[in-house]
Image (cartoon, rainbow, N blue to C red; front, top):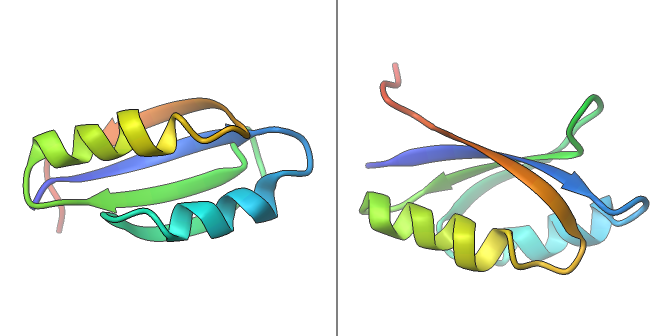
Length: 78
């Protein structure tokens, strides 16, 4: 199953709200608020790479309080 990790920069103070919204998106398997350069890390897993891309492009990146994202597609897990 294709997996991607999405690193998200959120609007200042919007992290908690975004975490709640992200947990409601189909194919989002994990959501973690973190300290550092990024505010939130999301694990996306779907039955096809096309579904992973759709989730990132049309669901996650379109949320109002998402400022920017960095997507890392997993090539091998173990």
